[in-house]
Length: 476
Image 1 (tube, rainbow, N blue to C red):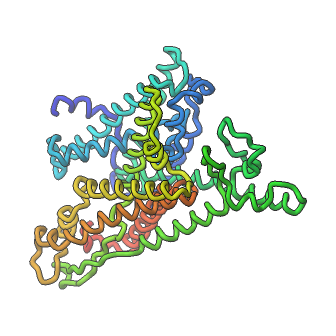
Image 2: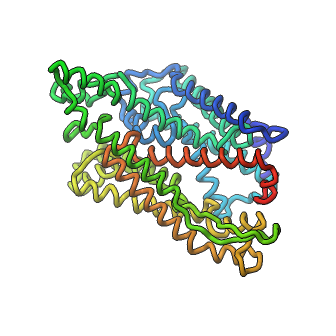
Image 3: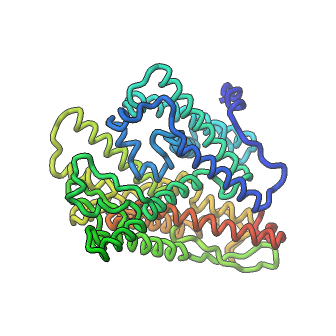
C-alpha cells in the first residue's frame, strides 16, 4: 500500500476549514454545491451523437428513471455518471475494510486519510471503466477518436467535480455530511416538480398512437393538465376531468402519467413514512458524569432504510438488464414464469395479482438481506453504537460503564430493528411503485428520509449554537 502513497497524495482534495463554520455559511456552500450539480445536469456532452445514441440498446439503461433517481444521473450530460462511482467505491471500500483485506486503522488519522484517498482513486477507476463500457455498448452513438476522447475527458472531469463536492461537504464546508444525499434529494425533487408543473407533452412509446389514448393529449404535469382538463370540461371538449383521474396506457405499454391516483398515493406514502420515522425504541441510559442524569436513547424504528432499498433497486435493474441481454443475444423465447419475474423487477403501476405479490416479495426479501449485510459492515451494529455511547460518557443504569455490556444490551433491539426496517422499507417502496407514486416508491422514501435527516441535523446544530455547553455533554 505504501507504493500507492505517491499517487494518493496527488489526488484532488479539499482542505478542512481552519475553524468550525457557522450554520448559515455551511448552508451557503451547500447551496453552491447544489447549483454546480444542477448546471452539470443541463450541460450536454460535446461529441455525442444524440440521435443515434437514443436508438442504441444501452440508452434504455441510462434513461432508466429509477437509475436517474438513485444516482442523480442525466443522460447525455456531464451528470451522466452521477454519484454512481463514489457510491459504489464507498461500498467496495466498506466491504474490503470489514473483511480485513485493507490494512487501514481508521482510528489513526493518517490511515483514515489514506482510506479516503484510496476511495477517491477507486471512484475514478470505476468511472473510467463505466465510460469505456458505455462507449463499447454504443451509449453515445458512433464516435470518432476525437469525440470518444472528448467524452471520456468530460466525464472524468465531471467525476472529479462530484468527488470534490462530496469532499467539501464532508469536511465541514457544507451541510449534511455528504454530497450523495444532496444529489439524491435534488434528483427526486426535480422529478416531483416535473410531474407537478411540466407543460411538455408526455412521451409515449414509439408504436403507440396518442390519438387512441385521451390521457396523453393533456400536458405531462398534473397542474397544467388539470387546467386544460377543466377548460375542456366547461367547453364540452375532450379529454376532460375524467381522463385525469387515472392516466395509464394499457398493456403492453404500462406507461404511467401523473394523475389524481398517483398524487393521492404520493401524499399518503409520504405521510406513512414521516409517521414511521417518528417511531422510536427507547433504551434507558445514564451519564457517568453530571450526577448520573438519566436519559432515553431513542433508536429509530427505521434504523436502516436508505442504503438497502438503493441496493435492492440497483441489483434488480442490473439483473434485469443481464437476463434481458442474454435472451436478446441467444434469441431464446422467455418462459411465462421468467417473463413474470422480469416484469416484477421493473417498478411499474401494474395491478395484476401475480405482479403485486412477486414485486412486493422481491423488494421485501432483498431489502431485508441488504439491511442485514449493511448492519454487519456499515458501522451501525450494536458494537459500534455501544462504542460511541460509551465515548459520550453513557452507561446502562445498574451496570458498570463497559462497551461489552452496552453492546450486549443493544444487540437484540438493534438487530431486530435492522431487519424490520429493511423489510418495511422494501415493502413500502414496492407498494409505492404499484400505486404509481410520483418519483417511484424508492425515490419518495429517499426524499423523506434525507429531508428529515437534514431537518433534524439543522435543529440540533441550532440548539448547540445557542447552548455551547451541550457539546461537552454529548461528547462533541
